[in-house]
Length: 321
Image (cartoon, rainbow, N blue to C red):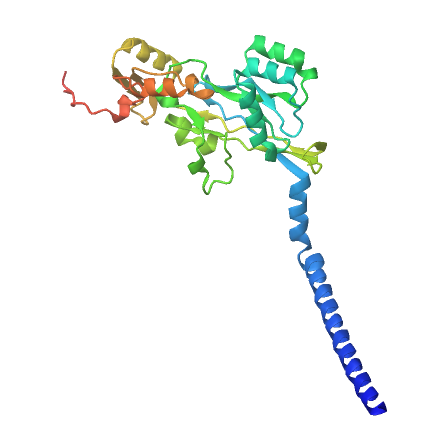
């Protein structure tokens, strides 16, 4: 009987020993895993955690100026005001939705859908209406105190003070497309890039350096405090060989008729004037052109977007006449 009892005790002790070793092994694995996460991977998880409580808001930089040979401004920037909603702060009361709907020309349902789809953006503003006129801006500012999560954002907008003058030389700008973002980390959706003329050829030169605001937010995305701000820096000024007076004279000579004129300095090849007619206004592109207006411009039988001064085919004239 005692021998059987001893055998049972030995088996029990053996099992307890195995269990001890198993528990010790589990503890070692657990401690090793903690050490790996807390020590070796600490910087990685710290960065991931910071992304959840720190939001970076882009401050877009004004494009550089374009001036003629005498320093006269051909392309500049003006301050425009956009009506925006901050998704994390917006309180969609009936009165707020009614007011925003009237100003933005969007239905209440459209506004709610836009805000709901942009919740992940937290404190980054979403635009309801661009380029508020002075009367509408005053109306919005008067009601702003009662509109939680609604703000007016100042943005630089490209402006061509001479309208159609030298449009084919200067070109125009447009919003960057999603497929153009590949491999270009400095560009974001909503950024403007050159689409024609020197705006396109010297786009990197004219693009400024973006600034950033770092905002601390809570778990719901609500802002707590501003951590820091890096100001934006405007693009560089581009000086052309073009002379505004010569350009005006050439375009006046064409007077809207189809044709092209190029005036060149024979000493160094500098272009003093270059105009193609008919023309277009690059200002129409600065705030985004409607699909209907774009189709109308593209389908114009006189091809106003064509730079006929350099892309047209013409029979050579006689140098003796």
